[in-house]
Length: 101
Image (cartoon, rainbow, N blue to C red; front, top):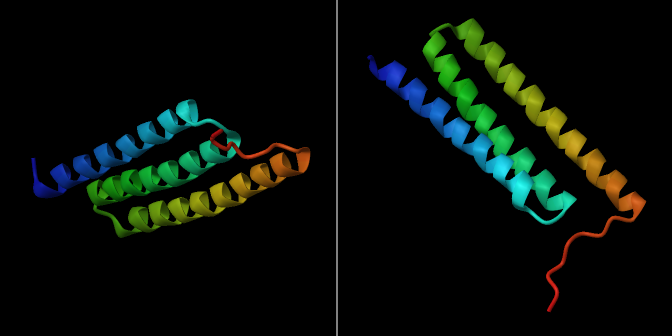
């Protein structure tokens, strides 16, 4: 195995770790707003690492640029979607979770 293949595998593994962390956050966090935060942050970071690993493995600048564009569009769309979901929940009367004393 070459150094680029090993680096690519490490980047993809780190990305999968962030995807798993986001999934655990979705299942374990107490309310909608915390779950949205976990999903958008962890999944965007995970996708960035996976896209970087695949781009490094492909060794083509065209594919790397396409992956970068996909990652940026996903970051933009997930930020907008999570904001709209949170805004709709607030309008509906959903209160953010607060630890009771």
